[in-house]
Image (cartoon, rainbow, N blue to C red; front, side):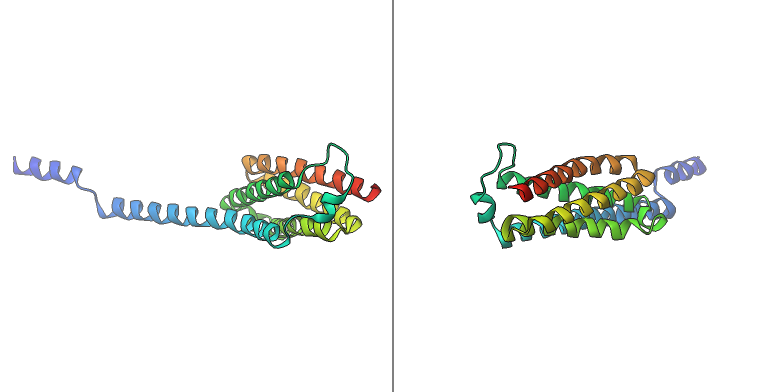
Length: 181
């Protein structure tokens, strides 16, 4: 009878191995949340700081634009959304080992973030439209390559790049039309 009580008590109590596995899972979860936060906050905060530092483009407002040109608030909102989506896609790719198995993906992602940040002050504030078009074309190319690498690692990450591709394609068309105005 005492043996049954002893065995019954040991089944309900967690072992050291189970507790260690739970602690490991908690630690991994905490690190995953921290890396996700970092992957999203860095590009979004960089984009937001560029928007706040350079403000509204008076040169862009002064142009006689076609009706299909986006207002500044939409450009800024879509740029923030694109930064968020690319940060999340990059995190998904890195969480599945994408930056280790494809070492070209990380420099491409960094180039994409840099190019997308530079377009706003370059075209909207300074008014250098031809250089803005060049940056948009190169940014579109880096996004296509990010799509290619992310597709190999995580199918959902590649799907998050698609709206960014559409937005950058639209900005490329807007930049081209700005040259002609």
